[in-house]
Amino acid sequence: MAASGWQAELSLGFACRGGKTVLAERRQRGPLAVQRPFYPEGDVCHAYVLHPPGGVVGGDALHLHFNVDAAAHALLTTPGATKFYRSAGMQAAQHQQFHISDGCLEWLPQENIFFPSANALLSSEVHLHGTAQYLGWEIHCLGRPVIGETFAAGRALFKTALYRDGKPLLLDRLLIQGERDLQLAAGLRGNPVFATLLATPATPELLEQARSLCAEAGMGTAGATLFNGVLVVRYLGDSTAQAHRLFRSLWQAIRPLLTGRAATPPRIWNT
Image 1 (cartoon, one colour):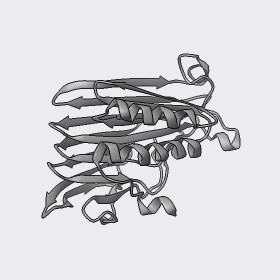
Image 2: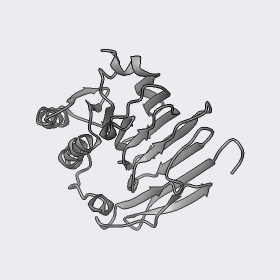
Image 3: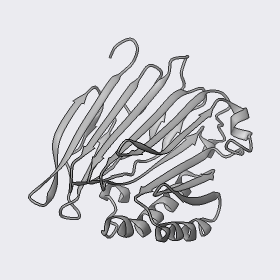
């Protein structure tokens, strides 16, 4: 490990061969890896992205590159939460760049936990080409609310960009820098957990399904919108478990409408 931290990269390429999606390309550098693929659906490739050190510290930079070719369908998740620890000043970064060309990618990771005094950047770019389908979410927890620890100090920047054939469909940016941003009405309104689910190409039918499930979410606040063919669902509350329950329910309801396939949860979700 260099003095500036881990510089890690994982590049995965998925292709359809003989009617089955295979992990056709894999390159890795540093402490990022992927387990061997699973096929609980027969032809869809399920894979788990691993970060063995278990946490990200100041100076670390993680780069995830996923490419899905025509007719290929990959579902990726993580076995546990990603933790961004306290920083003495240096930034910790995770950059995600996905390219889907007339295929389908589902990115369904566990939550990200940002410890107080972390200095973190999480940047996601999704590039869709042709008839590509994407269904993904990100769940973030600022501080550790279960032990009463708040994100009173620190900096976390979140950037998401979604494009189809080079045209921007969604550009999202949120900066949280200390207690004030947590409390603002235009910020997180005192809630430590926020999450976003994106699905495209979406229809009004998907929107109605999502709104119905959001209305039944119970504690926390959840809402759904549809624009530029993208379903956007947002959750704001104090529980990552609740965010996961909502998003998994949404995934089970809308996946058949988006992909024509019944929802088959990754096996690791049962452990």
